Length: 133
Image 1: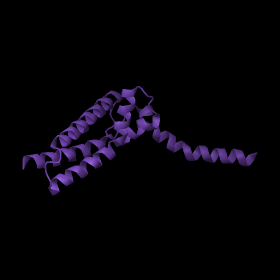
Image 2: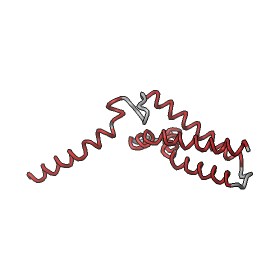
Image 3: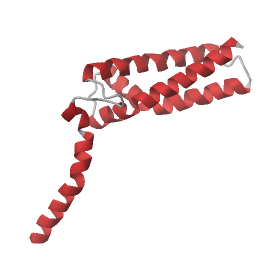
Image 4: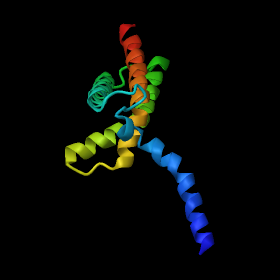
């Protein structure tokens, strides 16, 4: 019986920092890498979502008209963006479908939003470079 209590205490002590870190936004009211309020973070994520969707549309509009290294680099950057932005896109799809959104998905969005924005901006830069030539 004593071993059970000791093991439980060890588990609680081991898991407590993980739980506290995962609840940071809930406990402090700060979300994302920029420690924004919930409202600010929601607007930020919406802007990032729109940006990456706009860039995806622009890349699709090119339609493979160019067979250059720059075009290949653009497509690679776009694939990278999609991989990084996957949590955000999954969240948006769930919201549109009226499906429940898990706590873990919310945390993945919170952790990936800034990286998604950076990846989208990289696609934007490569797109601009390709279309300005």
